[in-house]
Length: 276
Picture 1 (cartoon, rainbow, N blue to C red):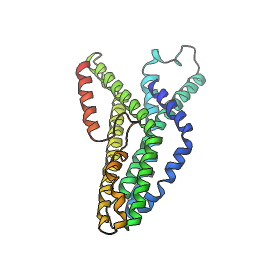
Picture 2 (cartoon, one colour):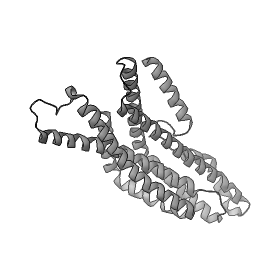
Picture 3 (spheres, rainbow, N blue to C red):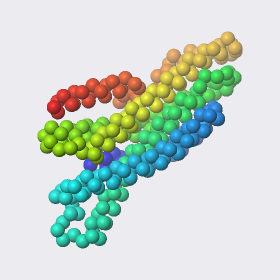
Picture 4 (cartoon, one colour):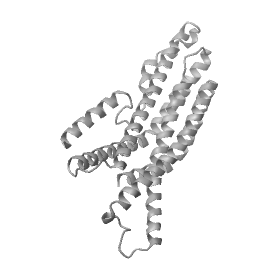
């Protein structure tokens, strides 16, 4: 239920913000030009690998869901009725597979897009000699990019974290219930879901934190141009204020930085203690 709701919310919001997505992608062109050939090739390979992993992982999720909930638990499965023929059973299997595939594909593909987006920003802001005018133009683009990310992607990030948190805690509850109450082996589906949600959460937080730190380092590096050109003197007054615009949040609810992982660990410890 949570997965389906998150999927439809993200799909609906994406339709509304379609033009802003296109604008955000166009704003990435200056950053792509700043990438060195090695980083460009590396990120290209990561993007292709991520696409394949998204498809395979979505298929794996859907297959495990059918095996776990559609075959092993026949008494709870809606298409396992006594008089059901093979055709109806296959149609329902295909429907459940497609439903789970689409739900998880939306989550995984958006996560991969956000992580790669942050990686492009971080790698393009590597410290090297730049002309003053070019550096300030890139910094202006950087502010616009962060503003676009906050306006366009931050609502989806909040939905994504709600989906990850709910799936993580539900899987943790199911694992503890299966092991301590039912005394059955660890459910494979729940273990995979727990591992994937934890991995997604860590990668999203680390990529966003890395992009923010690189952006702040680039902002501070612009002070070096004060000695080069006195005409730039007036532009340094707002740099302290600009630091608040170089933040990536989940719709303003919380900032996506490394301390968030420590808070999540505290939530998990408290939640596990209560369950036990």
